Structure formats: C-alpha cells, structure tokens
Length: 321
Image (cartoon, rainbow, N blue to C red):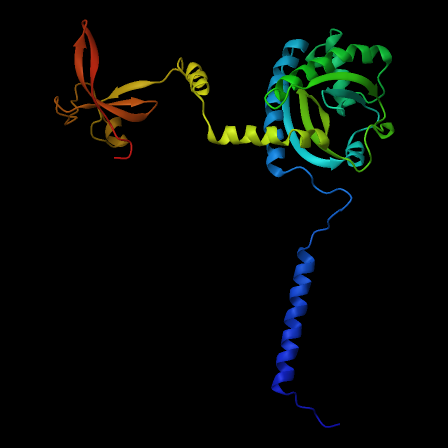
C-alpha cells in the first residue's frame, strides 16, 4: 500500500478533536453529582449565622453544666451542616437517648441527642461520683436513669432557648424520648435538616451531643437571620459601645517611663567592677519615653509631685512615625 499523506486541513481537524476531547474529559472530572431529591435549601450565610449562634450556646452550656455537675466541663462546637433526615439518623449511635423537642410556635419537632459515652458519666456525677472515677458505658438507659437525665436535657434546652432569643422566641419543650434513632419517623426520609454536632468533655471522658433542626424552621426565619447578620456586620449601637467599655474599663495595663541610653556588649557588662562609672550620654533635658504594655505612647519629663518622683506627659507619640 502506498503511504497516504495527510493534508493540512486533516491535521488541523485532528488536533481540534484531540483538544475538544481533552476539554470534555477535564469538565467531566471537575463535575460534581447533584441530588435533585435533596436540594440545598439553606443559604451559606444562614448556616454561618447558625454556627455563630450555637457557638454562644456552647459557651453558655459549658458554664451551666459546670455549675450543675460541680465539675469543670468543656463544650466545643464541632460542625454545623445540612443533611437529610435519613443521613442524620445514620450519624447517631445505637443505642442512645434522643429527645423529641417541640419548638413552639412552629408546628415542627427538633431532636436533641446525647451519646451514651456522655450520659453515664453525667449520671454518675449526679449520683455522687467524682471526675476521677468516671467510666464510659454503652447500653440502653433504664426508666429511672431517663427520669434523672431529664433535668440535664431541660438545662440544655433552657440555654438553647436563650441562644435563639436573638433570632426568635422559641419555646423548646421535651415531647418524648427514643433510644433507637432508626425507629424515629417524625420527618420524611429526604427532609432536609440542620445537624449541629457538639463535643462535651468532663475530665478524661468525652462524648457528642447532636441537635437536629428541620430546615422548614430555618426557612421561616430566613429574614430574621438576614437582619441579624446585617446588623452584626454594619452596625455598632451605643449600647454595644457602653457594654464593651464597661468590660475593659477595669483592665490593667503596664506603664513604664524609660530612659533609653546606649547599648553595650554583654562581654563588657560582665567585666564591670565595683566603682566603675557608666556614661549614658542622655541629657537631663531630653524627654523620656512612656510605654503602655511595651508600646511607645507618650513623651514625658521627670518631675516631683507631693515629694514623690513622677513624670509629666508632654505629648503623644504617633505610632506610624
């Protein structure tokens, strides 16, 4: 067979097809699957507001649990994400304790779950145990233990209600308990839910607490989240200014008046003997430096006030100078 010579057009078409195939391969690699049965219905800025809200809840809960259990309790917010109700059920351990919570005035239920790894240490402390004797256990709670735990859940819901007060007045009340998450049917399997994961630590023992909030509640409060986020970003009221000032007004700062002379070598300083004279070469009329927490703020002169050595502030110092 005779060798066939390609024309220039055929060569160009071949390179164009190769480039097009490479581009389609790259786009296919970068594509992400999209589940049309569970579209993302909560905006990222709303999730960010929910994260900030539950950070405040975590701090408040740490103080409340520490006082209630008479032990040092650490509470850390781990994550805030949107899941389907089925995915949220799969995250929860079995057995566990899940409280079904009425969120009035909304016609919907939230979920508050506390892992067994944290339940039994709390029960042990409520019944007189100490931090040093806490042990982890994983079994179903009895009816007596569940009734004792109710005070812990009410404490958590009280702080949760206080944290949500800035968004809406929601009355959280316990409607019932469940120990098997897979048996709960309060929402449709594909219903979107905001899952809040929080770690609780007492001594060497730690466990997780999970909160499930139906997305319908978040959607009904979407304008509240938008207003709250806008106010936080753009406004600082007089009341905020006064509150901040009241907290920092009694703060202590270190004030030094320094006479800064020349430097010297460490080897020369080690050779100093009794009777040696050091020349600072610093005129008596030259202003001294006043430093606040190590930062130069003012110039001053040495004076005597009520028979005590003092300094008289002459002028502020521009930090940019």
